[in-house]
Image 1 (tube, rainbow, N blue to C red):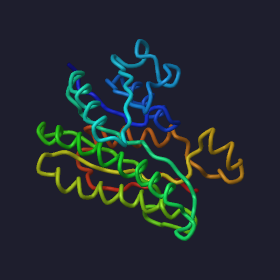
Image 2: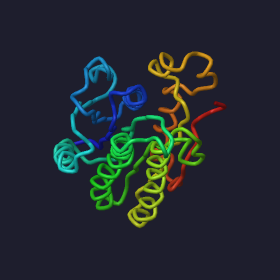
Image 3: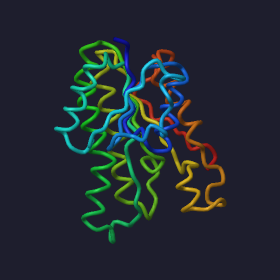
Length: 231
């Protein structure tokens, strides 16, 4: 069985770009989405990757995360985990309702926590591996208008730092990338061309992620790397 790179959030624009980048290097990829991804959303394994496994899970549910990882255990040893699950909603502290707050914390922070926990338990026993989380520019520079999102992403960043320290004795690297606005079709439709000036395409971020989970990046751990270009 070959080493796997697990990509959580594989059906989104960034997820598709990351899976395509990794598959382009002929790596074995487990592409995880909330529902079984449409085969058209990820590359054809017969032409790009030796093995591409499409898996479904609710990553906000700790029990479903454990079920997912039991399934992954049967596929091969995990070399790296890439966490891309997340979502955005605006709102100030004073007008963010309870439902929105809880949803953003669960979608951005809790999912990352549960998946990282399952991965860390396995990678620490292997004595090698990498975890890559996706934070946000707002984790460093929280501005007005996206309070719960900024708090959740700051939590992802702190989780990354803590895990890097905890897993260092096992030679497992843990890093985060911090995008700003990503140039995706959905953002183009909702924000317009002018607002996206300087936005970074997902393919460019995917190349950074691919490097960070590779053995070439072995000296890097505990880093939060900006990938928001000049936007």
